[in-house]
Length: 255
Image (cartoon, rainbow, N blue to C red; front, side, top):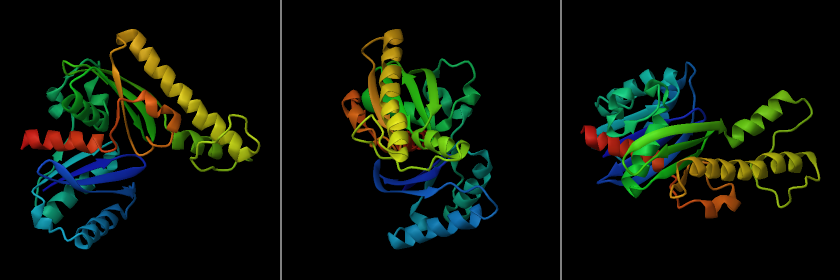
């Protein structure tokens, strides 16, 4: 079995694959304090026990992280729990796609994994929209060239920032309101951010297509990709496990 680990700013997503198919996926909150090693060791061990998965069955581990402090922790966990030297995605593994960005070392490994998976799955000019802590648009063409990335604050990030910076505004749930005209404070924030982000996503897709060509399909991924229901028709496909798919493909290629 292959274990893919996508370490993001808000969540760590795990996927267990056998024969190229996901048997289990699960998420844990991202923790980078002094208790992180013990916390993740206990959580992973418990999950394997609850699902009757032997640690010895995991022959390969592939890691992507945008939290540098957790890289060494998960490398240690992989060796301690599974006796494997993990594949850690980074610029040395990027040649699978030709990068047209000026600083490849600044490219998020999760975005690279997204591009690898989208190119493998669709073989078309593609805009990958990832609804995570950041809202990202990664553009890859049919020839396997990663052309660039656009980044905006994610939905939770926008709402949390408003809550933290404004004394009298409450933190609100991520629920799309029925009306754009807010009738109370919670409704007003939901309207401004969630309905506003519908326009942001549509405009970004339009702007990229105006620059590169209308043939670019849009693919959605990320834990929040299902929240903005009005955008469903904008996407050729919604692939919640796209990042994990990319990590799996990279791991299978490295061997």
